[in-house]
Length: 268
Image 1 (cartoon, rainbow, N blue to C red):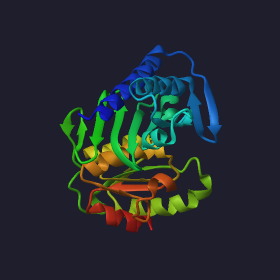
Image 2 (image 1 turned 45 degrees about the horizontal axis):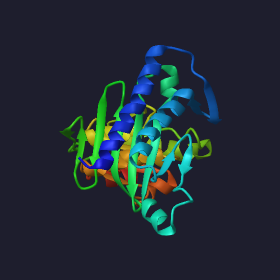
Image 3 (image 1 turned 90 degrees about the horizontal axis):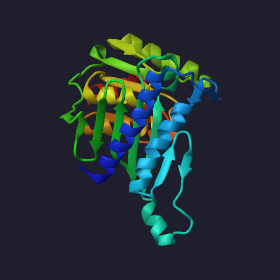
């Protein structure tokens, strides 16, 4: 196992233990709205701090982009050459994807950690602490669920596909666009599921529980790890036009190789 992936797993499990303790504790949550329909709790912050602590101990000079604390840069005291080398590695962390689910006790949430090197996602972990399911991948080395190799399904037609999605709850101005796409997928697929944790939905495409997924208005930490899981499991990932700009645009589509072009056509 690559050392970076090993640390990512340790960080995800540490964050997961914080989440599980809070879920079992039953103490009232301190809930704050960051934006409309977008919430954060003290558990998000504690889980993020726990994950970052593990990463910082192993790689104190790496750049970290985390949902709650933002991006931490390489220390200014470093030389320009050293900073350039160190900044080639960036950790992208969502300490609790599915916060609204967690607040309501709905059992669908996870920790997502990706490691980006030279602008490409090289390692990925999505950890479901409730089910103790660990989804991992390294570029060129395949994807795994609890150490067992994952592959996307062999689904070849959208009409037979179970498709995951997420509502554009942060961008309600795009609701009409989303509803048009939703109608197309509803008419053309075997069914649609919306569980509320994009990173876990993407992991489910990688392991074959879903045949496809799309969502609009996501952040990099929602997508980075799950996208690599799918690619390494034999699936295809892109933006809604099929390009590779999804981390910047926030719009993502993913599916088995045969379903992917049909999914994009239906979304158009």
